[in-house]
Length: 287
Image (cartoon, rainbow, N blue to C red; front, top):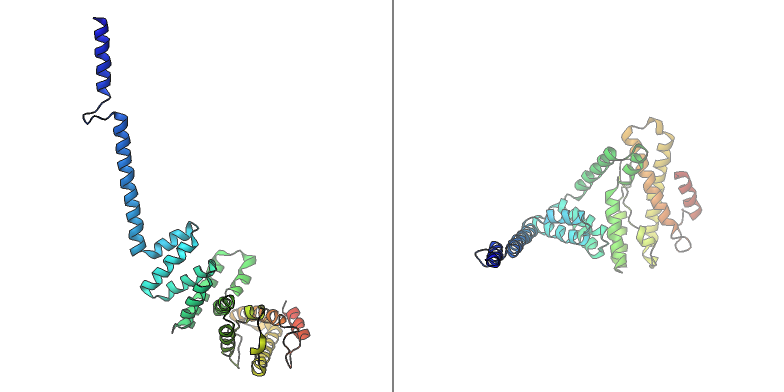
């Protein structure tokens, strides 16, 4: 009798661990967990798919935060293909630069230059850059950072020319740099921004025959004029307004860049009224 009671208890315990569907409690928990996980996974994929289709800007931002810069660039291009907004185009350019995607840099910066409101947009970006630096940079860095961010046009055009040089499109790079340089105003003033995108051309192993007499003369005349304006304002610095002082430093920074680039032509190209000793002395005075 005692053995039968024990057997009955064993059977009862076995029945207690078995559900009506024939599964044990452990198996049922596992099944529920897998189903729940599958549903969550499906929802995640559906959400990602939805965002990729309807919110590429968000996907671009999130992937950038996760360090997936190329993925971020891809969805930034998708966003621009949708809205054709100049702000989206600018985002694509910056992400292309960040990933050294030279074909994209070449393609999208060229599209930027063709925008009818390009220079208005550049002025807006420069103002935003300066404002952002003023709000976030330390007091010791703020002025130098402001100055470096104060010629967005030169920055983008040098990136464009660099992408052409990388892709061995030297003629296109040279022609663009020359045409852009010729946009400098003959009556240059302290508030103007310099057009100069020869940096990567002068540091590359290219043929400098495109620097004919006319172009070299233009470089001499315009840079001499800019340097004279800098020296005159340096002597009158205390009487300059705050804006004029800022533009004075921007001009000096641009001239240092120009003369540093010109030094790369030493023993390769000669100028009639501008020696390389003159250039070296001007760099010293600018520093």
